[in-house]
Image 1 (cartoon, rainbow, N blue to C red):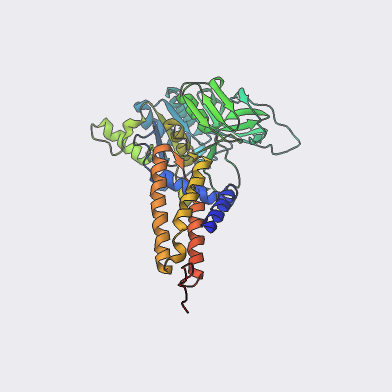
Image 2 (cartoon, helix red, strand yellow; image 1 turned 90 degrees about the horizontal axis):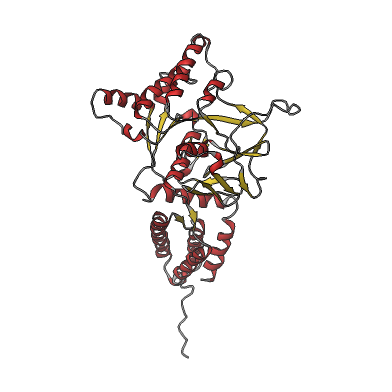
Length: 411
């Protein structure tokens, strides 16, 4: 029992730093993706641009392909259409010469579609100037003014590196899609960024703001604690302005090709192959989901695209499924339970000890899933596994009969 106590307390302390914190986060993502904590999907529909469609229409797309998307989405009257790609064909997306001939014509058609949408959010990127000695001109960006606490840990940028064409900006709101560089696993998403010392909303936060029909002036930020969006959402954040993502938050998703086919079926009076009616009144996010775009490590040790991370984050806010760790006292209770579990181990057979350990971890996983599903709180993952492994290994290296009381010798 003493060994279980010392191992448990040591592991609880070490899981707050790398590399064990990444393992605990992976356990949390497992709980999020496998627990039942909300059957109703968020009012979010993700339209994915996958490899099958890009085989016919390779990336980068011209404004024509984006206009095709609007033809399928606009009749369903979503509240917000969001595109995380930067719609700029001068710097962000360079087309082949043969497509550039009709670029102006296609761009005008896309602009008309943007004007027909109820609300638009387009992606942009902050960055650093090409020449660090030259300060670029100040550009207008959305700002959050009601910010309390230190903003020194929020990532800062001094230039707008990429943004939609000017005519598109006039018909939409912009949100910045920057993600932390050299991140081992993306369990959280930035909601706040800094542009020349001022706090600006990220793409995720901007999409939710527009959907909630609020402005940046309706947002109150308490750094290291929360973001209040009017009286509708209370979002927990850390000192860097990041929110923990619930990768199990349900939402609707289908491919660009399925949207096009379902739109034709709906117009013909046929049952659509995908539930496109869910697009009405919600957020519709057009994003890449092809293998080339899946460059960031997400939950369950899988790679995903930035758009998939944004989608999970938006659904987390809409469903208000803000996950958090159990209180410290509950973590100590877990260690105490495994101390009791370890009591009979010195007197058990070695093979039986292995089965005993697997059984305990299976029961613990079921309890952790139940706790997460009911309270959206995660139990520690590394500490129990470590305690079981150490106690089992200790029993395997000790001789048979170790720990059993010896019979008295009668002379």
